[in-house]
Image: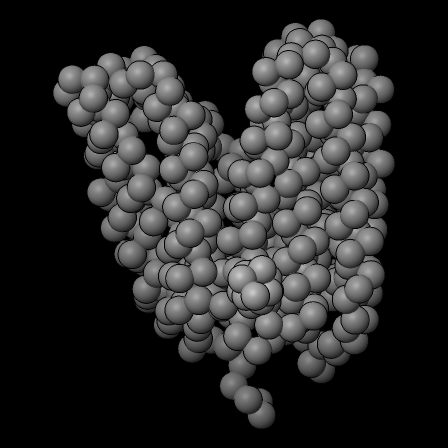
Length: 410
């Protein structure tokens, strides 16, 4: 009886329809694989393969830059040929390219294979966005929140598995992680076969082929979203360096902050995200996120001054507030990114949005390590004000976007 009740509860958490559960399961499997690979990939190429760290960084940077432009044509293909088909093709390419990484012995091979992977990832990401819209039709905000919850759980589970390989520190352990990620891409593609074939939606007459590039409110949001995306490397890159170089907090705090961030995001995403449905809701959530970052960044800066245990407490409190802000920010991105895009062009619009976000992530490490760390406490305060200013634009941007949407019957 208890087992049946628990199963039913998990089933309700994982979606209210068959397609929803399929997409959530596929995304969960994929993110477990990502967690396995991302946490240990750099060490594999430097320690097991023997490539210099600067070559690994250069190869991944080149791959990322080239891959940036693939999301838009990939999204357009998803709109015209079907999001499920394009996403499955992209996953198949990623499965092959990921498995091929175990054969890498040179910088050139790593660059080529990583570039193929990044092109497929960008195209697949745009198709995934279009597919999310088609699957989550009844209560889209609730579905997207549940989807992100399981995505977070998948990354956490994969990261735990990666930790075991890192502890072993053998080539065989790293190869197992890479092949595990390749298998996750293949399994994700197979799961998508369980989804129905959603018909392609016809574009309205005289609709411009690159409508997203003429949509000024959406392009403005894309720029804001890319800039607000600097918040992600704050926890993964900036704060660990700050803790190790400027605070008396113990080193285990670095591991603790990842656990706190992932756990709170997973626990809060459905509760908060399910209430942020419309673009207007998204505009308000974007502003709330900025205000919460305005609190979390100074808390991180203050950790450099008090005694060790107070510093550790400040860091954990800051990460909690930051995690809460991240949930509001991601929910706002869903509501505005999907809500302002026309149904027939979701793939194209998600490709544009993904390009903006990826560009922000590419610039983030340099900005955060030079400006924020270079200025110290003043840099943290400047970052806090920057996030708050971005968030403040959210409500007016949402109203602007809704005013410029085509009205029914027009």
